[in-house]
Length: 320
Image (tube, rainbow, N blue to C red; front, side, top):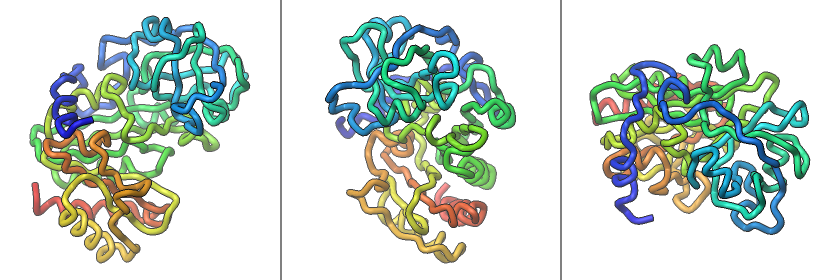
C-alpha cells in the first residue's frame, strides 16, 4: 500500500448517511445491506498461510461474496446453526476466496473463536454492527455489538475506541470523555457478551476495520482530520504510546500520562506488536497526514481510565 492510500481510501468512501450523535446500526445507516442470512458451512482450512493462526480471519466461496454482497477486506458475521457453538455468532474479516462451495474457511483458532467443530453448518451475515440495537445499553442486554458516532463540525480531532464495551473495557468511555472535553468527533465500537467472551466474538484488529462494514466510520472516512487518538487495552504493563504521529507528539502524550496518572508510560516499539504506525491503522488513515496516536493500556491503567483520558485531552487541547 502506497503513501497515498489513507487519502484515497477516505475519498473513495463517501458518507452512508450515519445519524448525528447516535449509535449507528447496519439497518438504520447504510441502506445497502439487510439482515438476511446466507447458508454456509464453517470449515477448517488445510495449510492456508493467510489463515494459519488467525482467529479473526476467514475466506469465503466466491458465490458467497456475491450472495452476501461483500468484498474481500470487509467484515462478516458467522453464526453456527442451532446451539452448536459457544456463542450465537462471531465477527470475521474476509481475507480472500476459497474453492469450496458455500463455505467459510477458517483456522482452528477461528473454530475455537466460535466454539464449533470443522464442518459445522452455519449462516453468514453481511454486516458487522447490530442491525437492531441502537444504544450501548441495548447491546449489553442482547450480548451485541454497536457502533457509536458523535460527529462534530470541527475537523481537527477524532477520538476513537474500536474495541469498547467489554472487548477492551472501558476504552469507549475514554474516547467519549476526550471528545466531550474538546468538542471533538467520537467514533467508537462497543461489544458485549455476558459471562465473558466479548473479545473472542467482536475484536477486529485496527488495521482490518473496513468502512463498508461500519457505516459510522464510512461517514467520516473522507473527513481528513488533523489529529486522531485511539484508546486500546493490552496485556502489557503501563501505557504504550504508538501511532503514525510524530515522535514529539507521542512523547508529549507519554509524559502527560506518566506525570498526571503515575503509571509507567513509554513510546511503543515501532517494530513491535503495538507500534500502531501502519497506514492501514484506522487511527492513521482517518487523518490527512497519517497523524494518529494509539494509546495501549494495561488493566491497571484502565482502572484509572478517566485520568488517562484527561491527560491525553490536555495534550490535544493545545493543538486543536
